[in-house]
Length: 112
Length: 483
Image (cartoon, rainbow over all chains, first blue to last red; front, top):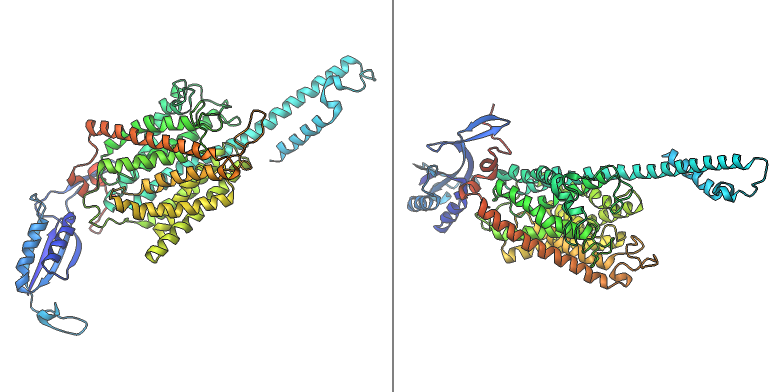
C-alpha cells in the first residue's frame, strides 16, 4: 500500500478530483494548506503598509491506495494538476504499514 | 408640532370670521372708529394673516424636508452597506472586497458625475428624451424649491435624494459580472452607463417634458413611482447583457461556487429592506399620506414575496432556505417599487407573491436552462422583478390611492386596468419596452468601447487568484500563522 500526498494549486482541485474518480479512486482527504516552495509570494498593502505574503494558499490531497492503482493515480494527478508554471506543487509517495477500519477493526488492504 | 397646529387653527378661524375676511366686507364702516382707523386695523390683520400663512407653509416644508433628508440617507444605506454586504457575502471569499468595492466606488464616482452633469441630464429641462445642460455643476439648484418636482422641499434636497438612486442603479449591475471584471474597466463602464442609459431613462420617466412622465403629461404616461423601469429594468437588463458579453467565470457551472457567507448577505438584505422605505415612501417627495401608503405597500410586497419564494423552494427542494427568503424579499421590494405609490395593501400582497415565485423560477430554472453566468442574479431579480412589477402596476393602480390622471376639468380618472383603464397596461408596456431597448443597446455599445480601450476581463491567473489580490492588493480575510 502507498500513501500519496499531493500539494496542488487550489484552482486545479476539481480537475484532479475528476481524474482520480475516473481511474476508480474512491476516497481521499483534502486539506487547505499554506506554504511555499520556489514560487514567490505576493505583496499586499493596508493603508500604505506593505506586507509580503510568502505562504501561499494551496490544497493538499492525501490518498492511501493499493500498489497497483497508486502509480495510475500519480499519473492522473500529474496530468490534471499541471499548468507548466512554477507553483504547480509536488507529490510525495511513501509506504504504508497497515490500515485499520475503525468501525470493525478490519485490517490491511481490504480496509482501504 | 403643537405650534404650527395652533397657528393653522388661528388662521382657519380668521378666514371663517366675516369681519376678518376683507377690509371692504366690514359690515359697519360708519361705526365709532373712523375710516382711516379701520383701514389701519385691516392692514394689520392682513399683515398678520400673511405672516401666519408663511409660517404654516414653512412648517409644512420643514416636515417634508426632514423626511426627505432621512429618506436620502436611507437610500444611500441601501448601496453601502446594504448591497455591498448582500453581494459581498454571495461571492467566493477571494472576491469579497472587490465585490464590495464595486458598490462603494459608485458612491464616489456617480456622486462626482452627478454634481458635474448627471443631475442636469436627468432633471434639467431638455427634450422628451434627455435633460439639458442648464443645471451643470448644480447651477440653479439651491434652497428654493423646484415646483415642477417638489414644491415644499429645497431643490437641493430633491437633487441629493435623486442622486442616491443614480448611485444604487449601476451598483446593482455589478452582481452580473462579479468575480471577473477589471476594476478599471468597471469604473469606465459605469461612468458611461450613467450618462448613456440612466440619464435618459430617468429623464423620460421623471424629468420635466419626459416622454413617459405620467404626472407631467408625457406622451406615453408610464406609472413608475420609485423606479421599476428607471432603476430595476435598466440595471437588470444591462446586467444580463454584461453577463453574456463577458462570458462565464472560469469553472462555471461545473465547479461549485457557493456563497462564502450567507450570514453577510443576510445582514445586507435586511438593510436593503429597511432602506427601501426611503426609496419608495420617499418617492412621495413629501411626508404626507402618500408616503405612508407607499411605505405600507412596500412592506407588504416584500413580506408576500418572501412567502412566495420560500413556498416555491419548499415545494421544489423540500426545504425553505435562508438565502431563498432574503432573495424573495429583494424580489418583492423590486416588484413593488413602481407600484408603491399607486396601489393599496392588498394589491401589494398580490404583486409581492407573484414576484417571489416568478423571480425564483427565473433564477432557479431559466438561468440554468440558458447557461448564462449572471453571477449574483442581477437580471433574475431586478430585470425580471422590475418588469413584472411595472406591468402589474398598470393592472392594480388605484386612483383612490393616488389620483394621478385627471381630465381637463380636474376630475380624477381611472388609473389601472382593474379600474377600467386598460390603456394603462399598454402605456406600461411602452415604458418597459423603451427601458429594455435602451438598456440592451446602450450597454452593448459601452461594453464594446470599454473592451477596446481597457479590456473587460481580468487575465485568467488573476481570476483564479481572486480579484481582492489582483485588483486591490488586499485580502478580505487575512490569514495569520498565529501570533
